[in-house]
Amino acid sequence: MFGDWSLLTALLYVLGLMLLLVEALAPGFGIAGISGIVCVLASIFMISSSALEAVFILVMTTAILALIVIGLYKMGYGRGYIRKLVLNTEQKNEEGYSGGQDYSRYLGMRGVVVTPLRSAGTVQVDGVRIDAVSESEFIEKNEEIEVVKVEGYRVVVRRRQ
Image (cartoon, rainbow, N blue to C red; front, top):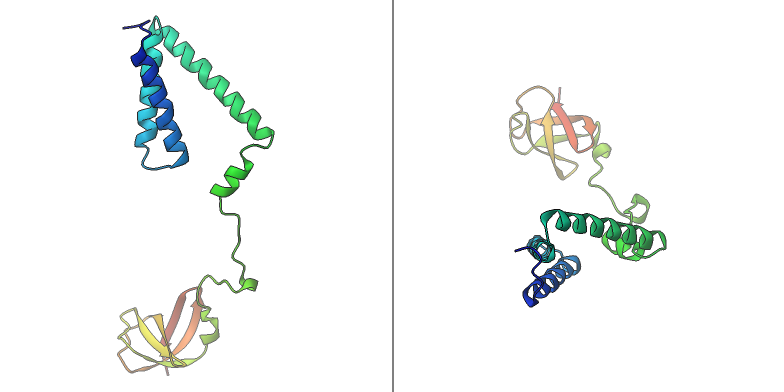
């Protein structure tokens, strides 16, 4: 088994490299990458005279590859590729982006319960439907409420006194 250099071994190695290239260019579920690694490892074990020699070849190849990748990255290669993979843009509020509704404008306003508030439900304030939470009690439909607290997306209401 060991030390057998044949056309099959070379084809297995080339197939493994092609599968790894496919995985690198079109990432998927990893099937091509795992298959490529298995093919390359199998071919290396097939050409080695012993398992120890095969492991030595794998360790040295990995170390050399790591040094090449680090060297290329330090020289500037790869930064453009990484820039394509990582989202660098920001969505700023000044440019019109928002993380959601700003409910703080409803603080202190009065409205009507649309769905019963069994701790949570829907209220209508200033003609706008809002998901809300009652402060401590069950509030029936069509009762008047007042917004007493706004914490981000959480609007807390109480029955109007």
